[in-house]
Length: 527
Ligand code: UDP
Ligand code: MN
Image 1: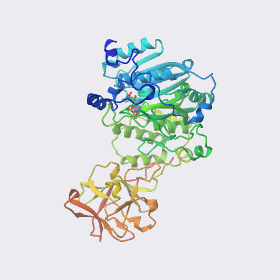
Image 2: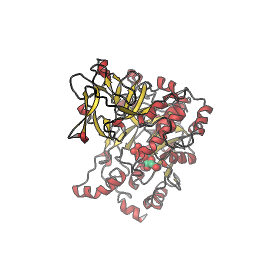
Image 3: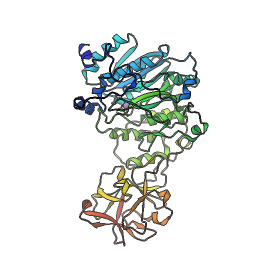
Image 4: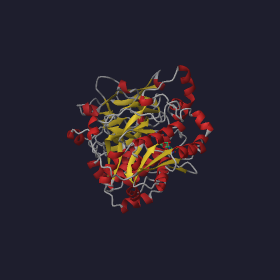
């Protein structure tokens, strides 16, 4: 306890800076001291230690929310926070603000799941602090080994006793009246998974930044993102209305009826570390009879951190988890996930674990087909069903180099040593179009390779805006020339003093041959 009070000089009666949500700043000297902690946590933990645990944040609800009334008789909620080696003051501020801004009669308990942290401060000192400050309110679960955020959330659920469970990262802050709108929607229909709107706590200054009202979506790699609310919501013109038809969730904050979540199969416990589970839950709840929505009148603030302290290659795990989602839920559309990650559909060597239980769950819950979800819940999502070849593109003249989208503002394709990630993702379609760059979800970020018949450099343009069809159409099959239909010129390499020894040009064909790494098989499931 002593060590704790010392490091958190703010705890007993400390006013702290940043009261009332005022920005807190460090002197230049303090800033230097803060660096190691910033690097460790991906947020300014040094500053956090100097801000009140009981600060209040500005009210960013749409103003009409303040006129709404909610029933007093609402189900009780268990708030579950998971953490691995987060800064103690950040975890405690999450707990303090949960207690301060959740009405006492609605708060069943707080559950802290320690996903096998190493930091000694998070052992006895944390436990003694919460037990003294909030006797009987807080349960602590300690994972004996690192389970990852997905199984950690499930562990928290197992000990929860409230009728409703809320799942949060351990670096969030609540705001007044966040609870009632959420519980009212769940009381009304227990099959709703309800997402408070997320605002941002700036990782460096801990100031609150309001985020626009938005839905949550994702791209085909299954990275989540904020998306514009659907047209129906805008048309309604009611800023307090739930944003419905939300396809998935960001994941740092969601609330669900406890028993319903159990029936639905919790989060996929076969997933490791990070990523994909938030998308999977969205897909599953929609396909299996429930829904997901965002509430503009309920707001929770979250620190969008700049790095993940627990792993330096989370993409490795997200990719594996994404393949589970593709294989269990996406039917023939799973090819989009393989495409986005540039993985062959067969013999890819990625062990995504046993999915039989999840497939059985899908059967048992009699869930709909993925196409229904795309048509009805996420119609904005682009489908890339016309793909013939995909992956990095190599020319036999210099096969260590790959076509690359280069600097976006140049709008030209270029060459770069191969790495096979997004900027080198080529895609050749049935219609003979050649795209380059990471797949977007709804935007136009994948551009097509165009011979504008003027420049001798291939252009990278928004395909929808290129009106001359032939300029964006190429004759190609594996291991042969890439010939433009408008000009008859070929995409070729010429020696160059800059740019890794070669330059990409359009010129009279000399017989150079290209390969695109993967061929879309005929083996797709027919469901
Ligand atoms: N977390 C965990 N185990 C892990 C990885 C993460 O318990 O193996 C916790 C982490 O402490 C945080 C939450 O999971 O409370 C989400 O992680 P993070 O905030 O890094 O993800 P982000 O919000 O940045 O996407
Ligand atoms: Mn987080």
